[in-house]
Length: 308
Length: 201
Picture 1 (cartoon, chains in turn red, cyan):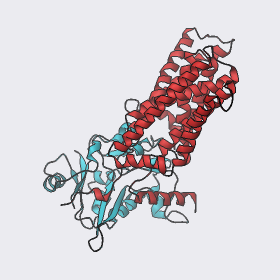
Picture 2 (cartoon, rainbow over the protein chains, first blue to last red):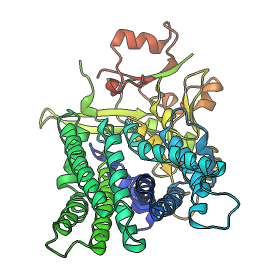
Picture 3 (cartoon, one colour):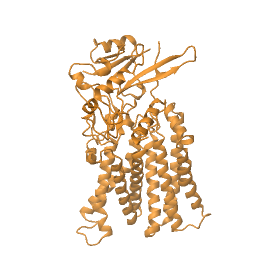
Picture 4 (cartoon, rainbow over the protein chains, first blue to last red):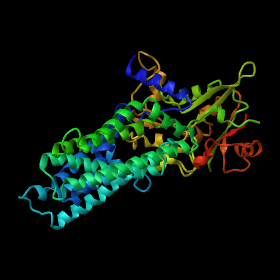
């Protein structure tokens, strides 16, 4: 069976179902969207904590991750050569806002970062150009942390995503991802001045917040009265995506980092902290992946018809 | 003016005439359905009946696909309320597909046709203006409507289950049927204000 006919057969099967899974985001080339959202979220978080801890390697990591996220987004688009047209609908579309935010962030970082790393440049970080870059990157960072959750909340066709908690959850992911990026960066470039202990404390607090928010979102979906939202939760917990949820999100993203953090596996050092960051970030990726893959369209069913 | 459609579920016999005529008119490739007919069985033998629900783009008053589109490719014609796509602007992000509560948008990711060897001359002519890697959807056969003809699905319904007209005109057939027969829309709770109404079966 060719790729086209296999996809066609899959669509026909899906159209016959009461609960049709969305496959455009998360399957095939759609994986690039998940990767893009994952990288951009981490990038914004890394930039935020890089600024808070005045840690230049964290800022560099944020910039590189954002660049990678941008490329992943382009790889996802059906018509990447038209990407610049996404600036047209900032007034209503969260994807447009995200595009503008990413552009501001990358341009701002390109103005602010080089003088922190290189010495022979015509401007410094304390110059007007440096401040302009800092401001643009800061605005872009805020947009990147905020916009992703709203992209999903605006998806009225997928009730599971239409939760008001989704944006808050994605903000928490960005913070958790940012800390994870700094923990990994520390292993390569040394600890930021404030030390690793502060980062680990923040990681624990943000992780606890993510767990609570995620539990609330699941509970909200189960009690919303929307059968598609309930079906999404079922897909995630016991269906076709359960393996990614239990293996990726829970085991890799939560159990392993907590086990490492306990110090029973190995004494807490820079390497172990980097491993915590790495596993935490991987868990966040699977969390986003499972949430996206669990999307089920609002059903259109003949049984909904009114009769006289 | 606001174009709208009324589908009489009592008249629909599930013949797929609308779906086929739409495909013939628009030359939509495999996997793209501007018009579909959903079928289901209800009850147990001997009291079984078939249920049919023809679906298409609802050309909403407040279309979430339009506000979700980052490029303005999805837009609404001010003069007649038809929701359309400018394929030259579409970047293929598929956010409109996620935003549509009626799942009536399709991503045309590869040029394909129904005949294994190659496109027939008819298909080639019909698909000449299609783009790949963009989202496609029903536009109420706007070219036909502007030429004074009804959409293909309406013109080819053998039981006259579909009626097309101006929802803003209280004397039009669509407005009259909605009022007299208790026309309803799908998923009114979403608040999009669809222009496609159904009459109870």
